[in-house]
Image (tube, rainbow, N blue to C red; front, side, top):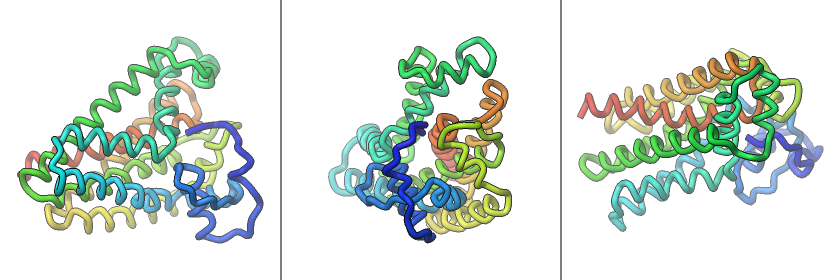
Length: 274
């Protein structure tokens, strides 16, 4: 996630839940919603972000459905298109955070040095390699999922929505497990997360995931959410070890890692079940 403060996002408006949700979508995607509010109002709905991100997953699943069910593209090509869409719709913000995080973690030195490297506009080999590894495995996992849709049921495509919900479960898990930086936008999301809201959001996402995967096994969707939470917790653990705190780049990383572990967890269970 980008750390710069763009004042257009944070205009003072009459606060409301719907405006906060629209503000989160405007802030985190390139969707032309033009809903602006303060960062504090947006951050209040951090716990609900996974549900909101389900809308992005729905669009991605629809794209996969068109290319799989009607055009019959190769699964690898469909997976690449879907992943490309997800990167673009999010404005590359999370992927940019992932690469910055990769640079910071790989460099030797104290947390201050690592954080300064993450703020450097130049991307090093650590960032490029991390982006390549995570991106490649994610595409391969999506390809495997789409291949199941070809061979068994198109319903497997709905798991793309579960994976996108889980991506933000990774973020909320990272928030609840991390100490906020003293600067940057990321601190607002971390500071506004509490255990009660986190558990509430988690339960809602479990229900949605189970409903989306009911035709192939509700436990698959549930495990996908658990995988996303594990990815977020793992990111928080690595950040705590190397940086001591979490910032926007760490939260962006938790989104990408959350999606990845969600897909892997679901694929493990699918391979056992089918």
